[in-house]
Image 1 (cartoon, rainbow, N blue to C red):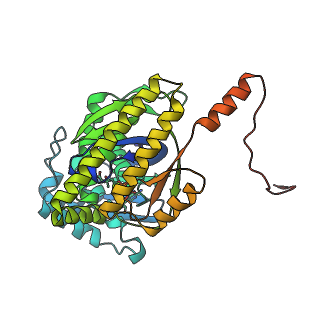
Image 2 (cartoon, helix red, strand yellow):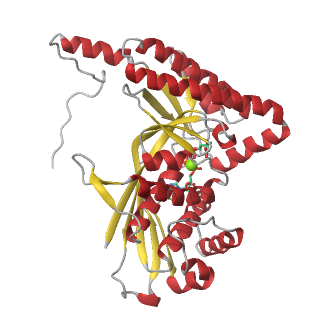
Image 3 (spheres, protein in one colour):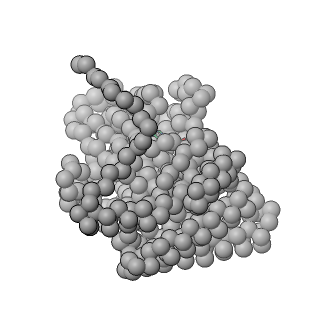
Length: 384
Ligand SMILES: Nc1ncnc2c1ncn2[C@@H]1O[C@H](COP(=O)(O)OP(=O)(O)O)[C@@H](O)[C@H]1O
Ligand SMILES: C[C@@](O)(CCOP(=O)(O)O)CC(=O)O
Ligand SMILES: [Mg+2]
């Protein structure tokens, strides 16, 4: 049996970090995915001699554990998982899982994978027990760059494993593709499991990343509550990856430490971010109903993003590479802010729809517009 599940990454338009401390945040799914393909031998095949394998194709590494070894280390976890109500991974269980991960020598340069492997082992053994199987993971998302690869990993894994366990099943089809969707209750269950995976990777996640990866669309998120935002006119964002690696868990912990050193000042910062996210979400919804004032709404969005970036600097999560992107885009009057954990990673730049609008108007006269890159190569030949 083979089951494939794919889950998208996300951008956070406003509210990262503050959302961990109870503020509102606004996030949207992007069309870059992580895919998990689960292969299970027919029941009875492999038996006690079988293995659990995971092939992380993007990092070129594969790992396996004999089922007997997993059973010995995790015992109870492998026997009595409550699939409808996942329980958090206890510190003892996490320590046993970490020892199983340490059985493999992960190259120092890729040591950050160990958190993902722990989440994998937790989700696999809790949902399917110590049953043999193989998961192949591939992703179009940069890892550790603020686009929610950790959540997409946990959501796609949970989706594939829960489908195999028979507790969720796909319903409607996605137009023109081979992919199918889950109903709301089943999505809720996947989201709850994926949140447990995120906890292993992030330490103290707000839950916004797994929620937007599970449910898609554009959402406002506050203290676990999710509101779907109807954004008729999608905002256009340029995403720039500074390629400066960082780790969300450490950044989230750094903000919490600053908050405990300066509780009042940071409470004001989080409150200001909350107001920005609330205002931004109402502008997004208004833009869906009122076409004409699009330009002024974009100006407001840009201003709110700029203010949010200033507050992220207050939290200590900007970086010199991010500041370089801000300066470069400002030269063209474009506003940018970091997205996700910060400390490097990705930066969002708001692209005005005015450009699109002028094209649409010209085309409405029957003219034809081309979007071209200029100054490229001359003649090119490919011989098979
Ligand atoms: N495809 C993947 N394979 C293995 N681990 C992954 C994968 N995607 C994400 N991870 C795990 O998630 C971590 C990155 O998460 P994080 O620091 O939250 O950044 P982000 O979620 O912004 O990409 C990686 O270090 C790894 O442990
Ligand atoms: C910083 C934070 O708000 C978002 C983290 O996103 P990412 O893992 O950097 O893609 C943390 C969270 O909400 O769990
Ligand atoms: Mg993450």
